[in-house]
Image (cartoon, rainbow, N blue to C red; front, side, top):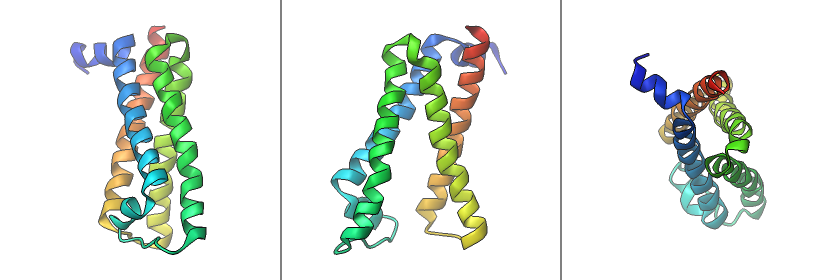
Length: 139
């Protein structure tokens, strides 16, 4: 890893950038699901209109994702929360991405948007994990 890239991962500023990005993504997705589940899931070809049970079941984890995203943001503003925020970000993104991969293996290939989401979640999760490992080593 070149020294500039290493400095981004090692520094508090780098950890804050990773946490700001991961928190923003989590909060934006959660807020969209909570406010407009039909639009969000409709973009994946999932029809939720008129199915209150399904909408309720989809909004429940969105609330958890919102809280996790806010916890990720906490590490941006309070250095004492950085490790907890990075652990949260790593756990959230890798669990979503790897669960999607498991589902693809077991259940088959879903809508291309969901396959893309799995890849993006794994990439963000790995970046968070690398940042966490470097941050802990540096501090």
